[in-house]
Structures are given as C-alpha cells and as structure tokens.
Length: 342
Image 1 (cartoon, helix red, strand yellow):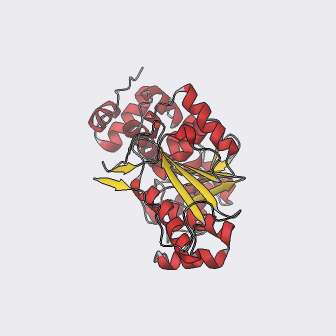
Image 2: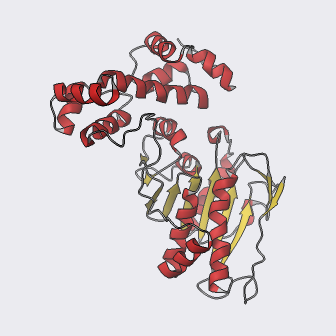
Image 3: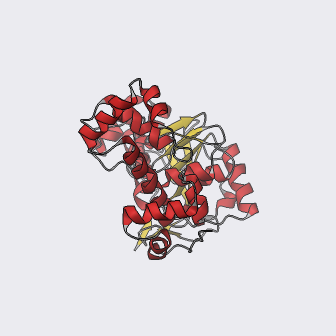
C-alpha cells in the first residue's frame, strides 16, 4: 500500500505562502512511524485550509535520505524529498512509533535534526518522537510525554527529561504527544494558537472530533485494575508506586505521603483489590519489567536494577512466579536480542 501526502487543497488561493501568516510544517518520518499518529496530525492542517479558504498551512513530508517512508503497518508514504533541504519550518514534527530505540542516526543526521529544530519556531515529538528528541539532548530538564508503552524505558534511558503522564505536554517551543489520536488534539491546539479557537473548533467539527481534549488527561498506565471506584488515597498510593520503581518506597513512606496509617492502607487494598499494598507494588514492578524485557534489548541485570530488585536471581524468580516463564524465554518469544542475567 502506498499513501501519498496530498498538498493540493480546495482553497481559493494558489499553493505557497499566502502572506506573513502562512505557516510551514515539516513532518520528519522515521522508519516504522505510526500512520495513525501521522494522519491525525496532518489532516487538521488540510481541514484548516478548507475552513480558512486559503493556503494558511503548507506542509511537507521528509525522510532522512529522501526515500519513501515505511509506516508501522507496512504501508508507504510518498515523501517530498530528503531532510537536508527542508529550510526553516515554523513547526518540525518528528514522527516515530514502535522500535524507536533501534533507529540508528549518524552523527551528521543528529546534527542536522538539531540544526533544523533550533531554527524552527516549534518542535513536536509525535508518538515516540520524544525518544528521538531526548536522544538529541533537547528534552533535558523539560516537561514531555511519550506513549505509555515506552514510558518506563524512556525514564530509564533519559532520566534528565521530566516525563509527565499526559496526552500532550508543552514546554516552551517543544511539544510532545503520546501518539494515536492525541496527535489530533495536539495539532488542533496548534491551529488554535495560530488562528484562534473559532477556527480550531471548526476543524474539530469537520473532523467529527466532538470531545477535544486539553492534553492534560492521563494516559492508560500499567495498572490493569479498574480503579475508578477505589478511594482517592489508594489512587495516590498507586501513583507513588508507579513513579518509584527503581527505589521502592516502604509502606510507611507511602502511607505518610497519602496521609493515612499503614494499617488503613492495608485495609483499603485488601477491601478494594483483594491484595496487600506490597503485593500490588510487586505487580506494578513486574509489569514494568516485562515491558522492558519484551520491548527493549536492555540486559536483564539492568532491568532488575531498574525495577528495584535486589539481585538478578531475585528478579528472575519473581518474574517466573508472576508470568510462568523466565525473562529470557519471554524475550526470545518477543524476537528481541537475548539478554544475560549475571
């Protein structure tokens, strides 16, 4: 399947810059990028041109070498050329998806992306695009977000970035979104910045996107239980557990932070989730460990440390008890490079 990114719009003015408020967007499509996220980001621009009846937004799709871009679903997008002649766009949007940690950029490519990003008015990381931006040092001490499947790996690899559990994050000229349809909200929000809320609302209406999100909404996390009916203090306790995996908190520390006694927290978990807080904490850590085992090529000992286990053998035993298989077996089944416990 080949997808062509159309730029011929049903507008009253010719293509190109229609004035000083014409905005240029460059989409950098990396190998295995998410077609859903890309389409969600580019379609609002076409609709905005239709609403404004002129070429208010011009956009191009680029790859690092100018070849057609291969999406994660196997489809191809015909691009406008190589990234090295992109110029100075008003918005640079870096699009990627699964296996972003395997994208190998040369030193020259990294320097080029940094140069274009520095010259651009705004920079967006879409889906796992934040991983690429962080690898370029652009998210150090910056608020950002990434698709929840990559959150734990991101925290481990890029601790200097301030990862926030939200659909969209903005910090200065840097914007990141979790991918999927969150890219639609990000781009509609960008249109609102440029042309106001009325135009953005018209775009959302035409896109049948009646429930626009601010972006501050939380993503689905690794918690498998329906937590909607549990006490607020329990949800705060679970947030603390999720945010403190490599150096687990004690039950007393968690209880102190949520303002209840350890005994009360024990009763809450037993009543609502039929387990102790410690058992639930272990479940979160093992769930995160499994994501790292199956989605990355990190060494098993590094995963054990990242998830707060005292030793590799302790991690392996807990993992096998929870999932019935060893971490090495699960990694082999996932097709990742085998790690070594030592």
